[in-house]
Image 1 (spheres, rainbow, N blue to C red):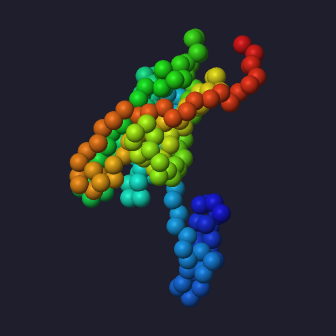
Image 2 (image 1 turned 90 degrees about the horizontal axis):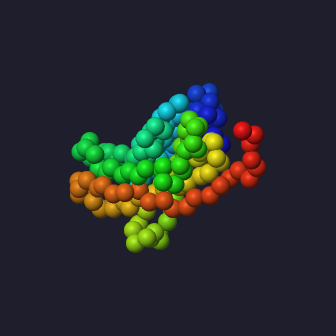
Image 3 (image 1 turned 90 degrees about the vertical axis):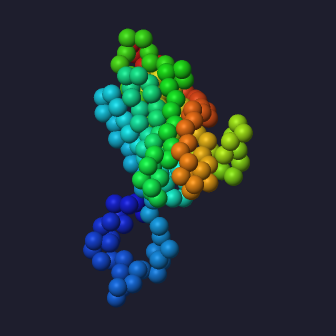
Length: 169
């Protein structure tokens, strides 16, 4: 079920019986991710660990992709991670950059390049070329718990081209 359908069911009282949640949905926990983009900037949210999420920003003009993580215990910055996507998704000469940004969950117990990744992968797609790159960063939940801010370079996980046909120029 989508969040929209669930919202409608909740508003209409369909999910409650005598003040109790519907038994089929009693263990349901909604987790929402959001994304939005304009002509030169995009933002998205995604879970970093079980208690915090990150705000991802992409500046189309500079190519800077950043993730800001706030500590819900002390309301301070728990992490700042960044990279520049221009090296991976170089804009086509003479064309205005056209990027899409979204996030997805990664539930990995393995390490990647000697670090445990955050619980979220950030996908960036170039609308002009059809190339997609995905990024993550090292995350230490114990450092967040201790109030120690983290700052690292984001790492490219994988890059591929989704478009196999050439568009007319």
